[in-house]
Length: 351
Ligand code: FA5
Image 1 (cartoon, helix red, strand yellow):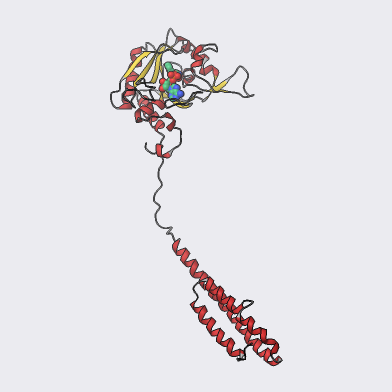
Image 2: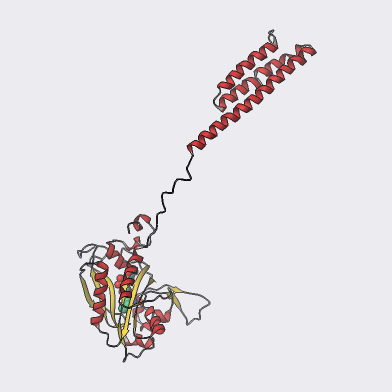
């Protein structure tokens, strides 16, 4: 210890530290004061090293002063640290402050999928024409999807619809089920349930094991339509098809009617629409043909009427199977069918 009076030295140091503590604005600054004063190699430790040379009385007197200084410093350091931490916390809270009473920006309401929008429009139209809206199961019996529609097991028409067959121990081997390949099974279900005369539409999801491309999906929507009464003719069919298309497109669209084969209609037609993506010039959607298959239809085959429990000598009718997803493509000029189920909100929010 230097020869100076230790009490005077301690008192001098204390006043320096008090001033430094008052000035300290960071936790780092506090730490360096603590190390300088109370650290193992700090100033107070230095002073206590000289205690061996002191008389017992001096040691006791100066020891008390030293301890008092330590206690004061420790407590001042704690107090100052708590104050600095409180300032830091306040600053953080201030920067993160949010006013919970400010009204929210508002929930962004969702909206119907474009295919559903078109479906609703067609439903409204047909309800106004006196048609019922029917529903059928997506997991369908082989009987309704094929046999009852005049497509027996060995019929080549089954190859036109590559099918997802389902397997379960719960179903008897001769009770085969599948994901319906079209909405036509609802024709039979509707006849069984409501009988004739009948006017119904049946929108819904259908499935095919397709090679997917801009106009083909494995999962897509169709809208079946059926009218059964006495003396229904092709003229009725064409009237309803024209009414449907002008209601959807609100303008003249070019269509063509050509013969088409479906085992459940006779005669059968394909109603194609001139491609609205390319205006008929040819593009990937219409496979460069200028035409899009949209609305196959025809007069109900007598075998189908019989499957539905009706006498074909008394009743006849027409049926159609609108490609609803393709119609939505034409309506909104969408050049890739895969957009509909991709779940991309940037696409969906445009409708
Ligand atoms: C049928 O599914 C018949 N059940 C339609 C029918 C009903 C004919 C009643 C006569 C009487 P088709 O396989 O052509 O027919 O499909 C009907 C429509 O569904 C097509 O014109 C097309 O618009 C649409 N379509 C067919 N396959 C796909 C596919 N993979 N992706 C998207 N749309 C498709």
